[in-house]
Length: 431
Image 1: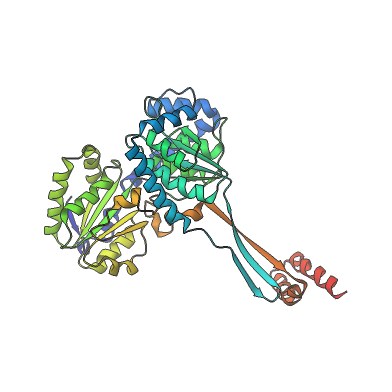
Image 2 (image 1 turned 30 degrees about the vertical axis):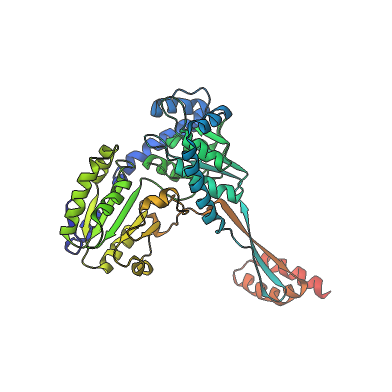
């Protein structure tokens, strides 16, 4: 990865340096996804089985995971594996329980009370990526907050292997979270099934979960007319800001931990000296040779960047402009930079906080905005699985005080019926 000196780059070169690989194929991806969604809407379960055979190589008779498959999954995992999943589950549950909203009740003036209450979304669709790396951790990240929120219907979709089976890790994680509706579906077709419903898959009100560029595009398309979505969470990305005192082996390991997700992942190193960047590059070469998914990581690195910043302030400005999904600060005083950081999905402070902790078991949620959406979106939390409603109550005394104000404002907007809804009550009170 050839270092780019930020201060010497033109405005177009800076935009190019921070462009995501997946965004370049946007129009083609959108057309393919639109075709898949149309097939599912027309053909329902039959189309889902056909698409699963085409994309996943699995010929299914039933789309739904059976009770026997859940039981077999529990038997397939070692006690130590189950214990690790339970530890991650407990940490996630503890952090998300602390996010429970507190009912709000305010008397804005005498006789006028306003409240805000929360209710769970009725039916949520949870997408867990599969393929070459089944992300059972995502089953926990989606399952835990939906369990705490109390969503009455929870549908989980994940791609099957060529043998038609779902990873036992995913099934065990789903059961830890009390999820029983699991379907062997992946990609854009899974998103379409949950958004529009089929004979087997319930129609969902809101869809959650990360995925590749096709999954992300499908979520965006169905959000226009069928189901709400959590956030645009596509191919994984990380930015590491590292100063001269950082450990090159740690920096390289953090970059590779995201590069191995897929060839469309992106990793960016922001350093302060070419000499240090060269040391990181040497570590990347050394560690790549040890990775089972080295070929995938290598493909991702070919589209990644090293940017040389002139100062910590410039590094922060680059990070805020890029708005990374994950931001790792391997600098002498990482917390000193935190107040100036405004746009990142999740931040990892210091040399001893690898991004992997957040991916699995620290307690924070790893479903985060990508593509720069961190400028406007937050990472997933308990509140995303809830709806809030406001409630108001007026006493006769309160209406007498506030009514004339509302009448004046309504007439100023030429909405006479609004004014009259107040006046008939005031006249009743004065009669």
